[in-house]
Length: 122
Image 1: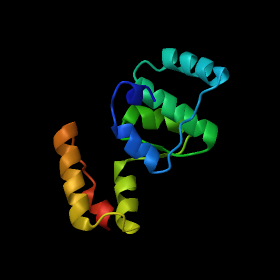
Image 2: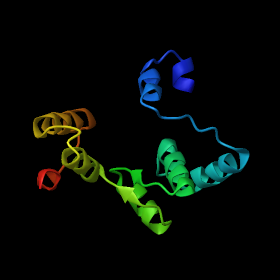
Image 3: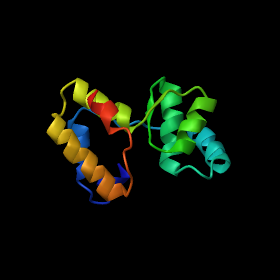
Image 4: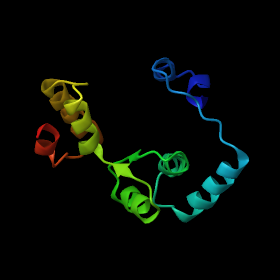
């Protein structure tokens, strides 16, 4: 909601998709502060997201090896970008051509390589 208040309107599109805003209680915030101090090599958003996934019993989506390792050590299921893109392909959310465009954009914008492309379309 801070993004919305700062004038970024992309949040409206997200909320229109049916996503809800979670209001964090003081216990969660205290746990987050402790973990954030411990996990200095993870981005603050990743720490918060992992903790929310653990609390809600949901899987965390990441491409970060450190985040995956933390999830494994703490019983949080995780998916990486290949898993997510494969689901999009299998559920026909995106066509193969659209997925190739998404992959190319991810690689260009994030300056990364998605090494297991063939698994997406298998």
